[in-house]
Length: 284
Image (cartoon, rainbow, N blue to C red; front, top):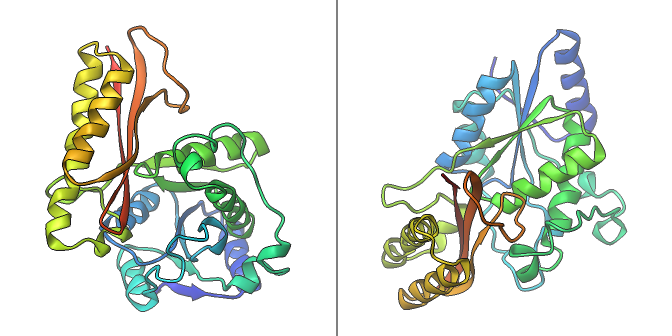
C-alpha cells in the first residue's frame, strides 16, 4: 500500500484510529519539508520504533521572526512526498495554516516553555521556541503518536520538546536521532542550499571548532577561554558568530567534576545563511 498524503484532520484522525484499533504502534516525524537525507534518516529510525510512521510537512509561521526567512523557506512538496514514500512512511500530514491555526495566527493559544528557551537560540531569536512548542503541541494532539523522532542537530529544540512533554505529561516517547553530516562534517540542513560552493566548504569549520571545544574542555581549559577561542576561530574563518558555548545537557552553565555530560553549541552566520551545530561529550 502506498503512502497516504493527508490534508484533512478528520481523515488523519480516522486513519490513526484504524491503526490503533488494529493494535499498531505509531511513530511521528515532524518536518517543515524541503527534505534531505537527514530527514530521511529520521523516518528510517521511526520505522524501527513502530508499526506505522506519520511525517508532517508544515512551514510554521509562528516560529519565524520578522527578519527571518519564512517567505523564502523552500517548499518542495512533490519531492518531499516521494522521499517520504521511499523511506517507508505510511502517511504524510500536510495541514494548511487555517487547519493548524483555525482562529488565525494572531488568535493562537501559544505555548511557552520557561528557562531552556531563554538562552542561546532563545536569546538571539525572540519568540522562536514559543512558536516551536505551539506547533509541536498541536501536531502531537492531531497525530497522537506513541513516539516522536527529532534530530540532535537542533539540540535546544530537542531540549524544549523534552521539557514540554514531561511538564504536560504527553504520553509520547521522544527519540533523539544522530545528526546526519556531509562528507566534510557539515551538518545537513535545509538552509545549506543557500550556501555557495565556496561557503559550503568553509561551513565545515563549525564541526572542526566543536571538536576543538571538546578537546580543550577535556584538557581542562576554563570554559570562558574555550568559548572565546571558538568565537575567535569562527570569526577568523569568515563567520559572524552569535555564540559558541559549552553547557550542561539542560543548557545551564556546567559545574566541574568528572563523569559530567557536556554539549558544545555554535550558531554563526556565513554570508546570508545562519548555521547551527553541536557536539555532545562526557568528561571522564
